[in-house]
Length: 262
Picture (tube, rainbow, N blue to C red):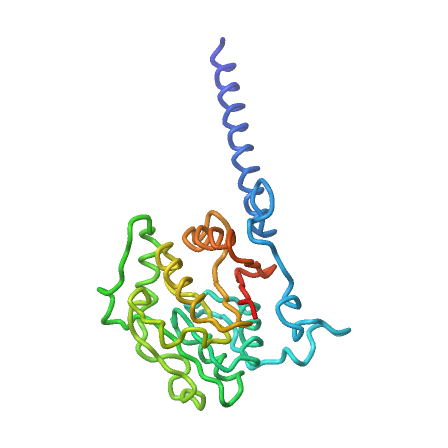
């Protein structure tokens, strides 16, 4: 084999490897956009917002006025809840009187719940205070980057709702959710949002508490169901739960919902 033939052979091999890698990347990106894996749909079945609540049923001009809410766009904020997801949560709060949130972060969801719900509605939200980081309990199998994210989001002692006209509707709890005593809230909540630490052990713990706190007919909503390569703790915990509970993934979002039996 001449030197030129060797060089050409190496170039061909490099091109083949590059082509396969690029094709694999394109497939992953396309599947992520379509919210499916390489080998088929994600385990939790999808549903449309209108299947959650009739308020989301579109009219001839798109979403109807029952879906009108006060809203703050997700621009340069720490919260990863998209505008579409936040709109869905805000609309759901309009029919809820007792709401609970695992993971306050900036207080954006908390504020929009309070702003859009009935005057008599009450919201309770739970987060670690900045001086409580040592209370966080990382367990075997919890990813380091997820732990880091959870702790770096725990930097707030005041929130978006602080000092607003709806602050009186909100009870702010500080503490680690694993040590949170949910017994005063058993079967008392209309709407629960699970968006605390995305470590597997925390998603499991928060979920178990949320399921005991939701009242018959109420909704539990989880954030960040994004496929097997992102937020793996959420992916694993919810896919496990879906074997025993009729979870549904809201298409076009990272939200998963469960409605408790009446």
